[in-house]
Image (cartoon, rainbow, N blue to C red; front, top):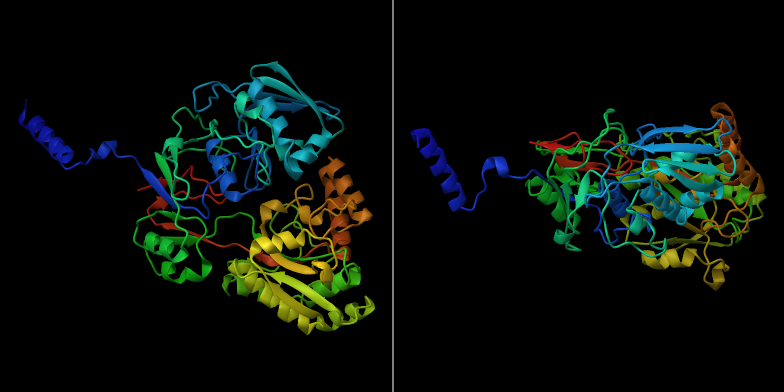
Length: 527
């Protein structure tokens, strides 16, 4: 043995004696504090964001949305549509494998999409147009539609609502309303079930069999290149403790830190604070259209005239205008459908107009019950601003404070206020839930009483929404969207309060963090 060999051997032995692994064997681990604990593993069973994050890491779909919210192929190698727009043919990429080593075939894809079609607004909308699937071979299958549907490819790549991910055949054939307990997908990360400790720890490992696409990474589309060996979720419920852990370098990434605690991070040169969502979260106030005074559209327009959006946004994320914007688009400013047609006369607060509209509605000072909670600070702040602005416009507001579960339960009641009903509540939602009439439940004004709480009803809106769904020509679709939006402003299914983009935070040695509607951990390197 040479002198150099003896020295190298001695160094290795010393490292092992002290319990240390050789440097070349140390895995690169990204330590993340997620916004919530992972409890449910089935991405088709819930719209909960933490489960959708899980689904995007561990599974893959036929398509994915890029930064412009256009669907790009992921598991699909090629696809085409017949001249009559009724038959789609898809061919899978070669070499796709599930985490158990089994190949991904058409036999897996077809029941996976069929299961997704049975759950949620988006899958249900898709199902109403789909006639059925047919296998051609292991990598090829067709989808036949009942009528032309311009959003077929868009929805197959969607990240809003439940996810159209591809599962193994035996998992996909599970009843759509029975939760799947396995998490064996074909995505860039493998869920390490043996290390899962609910309430404490979640682990994802790099999938060595995953073959990224060759296109550049763009939003959730393109190459998903995993540059770390492991992603560990550390569940830290206390926001201040999580902030301190990042400051000290005990964790690498905070998914959704408390905005009012970010000041101490912004002065830390070893921490980056930035927004990641490429579509804002929006705040809105939901009126009950079944009960007076908001069964009258003029009373709802009075709400819109009474609103000064900057007050709501400052109460939510502070006065840093990089974090918020005024917006009067029901389909989210900054999205491909972010029109504001019809809002021309409501660009700012106009209390005189609000009082005039309120008088024209026949309102006589009856009590207006505004439901709120102290459990969610953002909603509590928004509700306080709403209370003040509506009183200034002449509404006799009474704010009722409950825990959030009680608020949700009460908003499901259609009874009059004196019998346990309600008039108004304030909430928020991610822009990815609202950027298109196909997915925005707030602008569903179906008159069957089965739409979102508040139960707005307008046949003209529904005719225009149906026309939008069935229109395939992009220019004509834009015209229909504009007409739809004008009618929405006349009817005010919900009242817009502004948009905000709360930041995330990570250590400065973490590079390649992507701006996406769902937080993901491919493309990230850690030095």
